[in-house]
Image 1 (cartoon, helix red, strand yellow):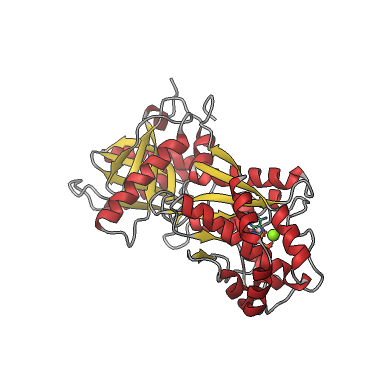
Image 2 (cartoon, protein in one colour; image 1 turned 30 degrees about the vertical axis):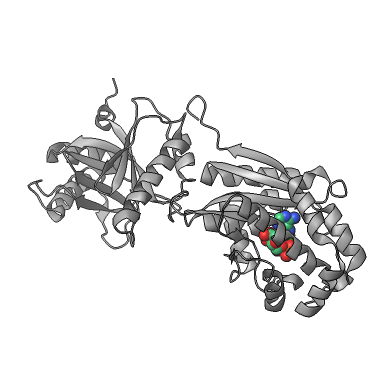
Length: 401
Ligand code: ATP
Ligand code: MG
């Protein structure tokens, strides 16, 4: 048996979520969906049932556990404010003080504070008194100074139900709304940097996405489709299941190339992509589309072109990156784990046959005239019908990892 006192007590994962602004039925939906997502994310790594207490979740840990895989997986759950590895103590000041001092003694810091949340008001001491007493015990053992404003280390004590939860690290969560608590959307996913980030941002509003990718095989290498699949794998960690529609775009593209003015190609490609994505959204009864456009980033993304492109869509097009600059998008791409895949060299369907001087202000009447002369709709219908559909699932952990 270990001689460390804190190891004699059970440990739990303590999860705080932020439900600020959510009321009544919305809050219940949020909590139920979040609990389900946490359970599914931790499957195979930690399978003990989760308990809800006073606006937080607690998951009991077995005697032997590895924290790293649990932490890894929780860092992918949308809707968490922060989470911690906590030790469960009886509501007994002597024990709380002893364990706090022992745990803090093993940490490296110069200044500290104790932060107490007393949810169980029946406990006879108030938060300030508890903090003062626990702080004194820590100081006695470590000799370190108290700094309430800017401490290097914090000992947190939550008094809830009949226990005291003690922890020292708050791991930041992604926040946002748990995936599945809002509706669904169809996201146009290239293998570039922007659309995976745009997709992820919409997921953090609780929306579950189905992905649509257009490829120009055999002109483009299988790498472009493969990279897109790898991107979907990364994104699936955040929404647990995904579907990817891979649509052959070459015939549509060649038809546009042969029949329209070169400067208008990209705008016409984009309109065609949106019409096809919308067909899929309609089939799936999904009410919105998502793209990774950012105003002014490339010639096809001027406001006038965005207006001309959007004209084909009846469904709203969500463009969460429209106001973001590239630096910010890249930072997010790194954080969510898509950047390294997105920058691998590949030929995108649209890097093929792209004119040197694309229009920056497409004229809608000219676009209509060009489209009237073409036979795009039957080609688009055929392309959608020959889509290959792939399904993805965030794999449960094996052997605790
Ligand atoms: P990304 O980095 O997402 O590729 P981008 O900056 O290259 O975007 P565009 O090439 O103009 O910009 O594409 C604008 C948006 O159109 C993309 O963000 C994506 O949503 C959609 N899109 C472009 N190409 C494809 C494709 N091959 N398959 C699916 N969607 C696409
Ligand atoms: Mg691109």
